[in-house]
Amino acid sequence: MEASGPRLIQYADKAALFSIWDLADIHWGNEGCAKAKLRSDVNVIKTDPYSFWFLGGDYCDFISPGDKRFDAECIDKTIKVCDLARIASHLTFGVVGELLPIKDKCLGALYGNHEHKYMQYMEHSEIHDEVCKELEASNMRYCGITDIWFEYNRKLRKPTRVFKTPTRDMIGKPNQVRLRVLVHHGFGGANTAGGRINALVKEMGQLQDVDLIIMGHLHEILGKVVVRLTASADCTSIHQVCSVGMLTGSYLRSYDKGHTSYAEVKGYSPNALGATRATFSPLYRELEVRNKAIVGGSHTV
Image: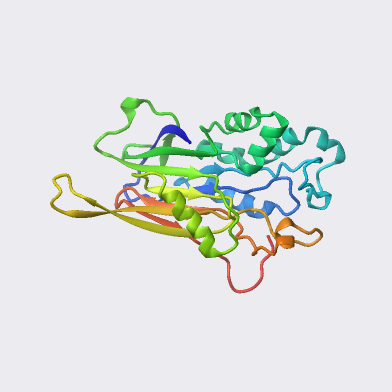
């Protein structure tokens, strides 16, 4: 686990409502990658001054020839045979190119099990370092924690201003609000809502004094509030302490025309496509998970 330090976000609208996204499980390089959905979410983050995001891991598929999971049918049809000779740079260059328009809003970058396994067995640990460098983001490895400090500044000439590595004297002021966030790529292989929420709740019990716990890997959109009890400093009253957990969706279609995915073979449920976001109001200190779906007919992404 990486203690990745603080971030500072200054804002001009006292009633601002911030969105914190987790772009995870993109699986760039897989034929099932929903590129249109990724680009749509990136555009929302780019145009919304109050949207910020984490890169949650498994941003590339990283299943190359020689890997027992390799299936030529699942490779993105735009990838040429000659690209396989430099597949790591080809994939990372591709996904980073999609994310560069919002690099100024990136609060941290994680790698997932796909990156971890590839870097471990191919001896390319520098891959994730390069991604972090391109996105100008803190390296949170597989799991990391950060404090996001929000500071209202009515004299600010633009809606927000972010400091990714604020100095110690810039944070902890009386007029600031802190949101402590734990981001974990995720673990397990649960195929039911109950199993997936249990994995999230397990992670929520790892650390105390965390406001928002974010997980990916399970390709599901879910939110959970956990309430704990504590006593006052003089032990004369009981107080509730709340944490909000968020499972984020994936950009990998589990059922798609023209190839047979691993999820289809295993009989997994269809993935919830797109990123989940939490919203936070520094004024009211309200934190919630936003789950959204397009209804009223079928939609192609």
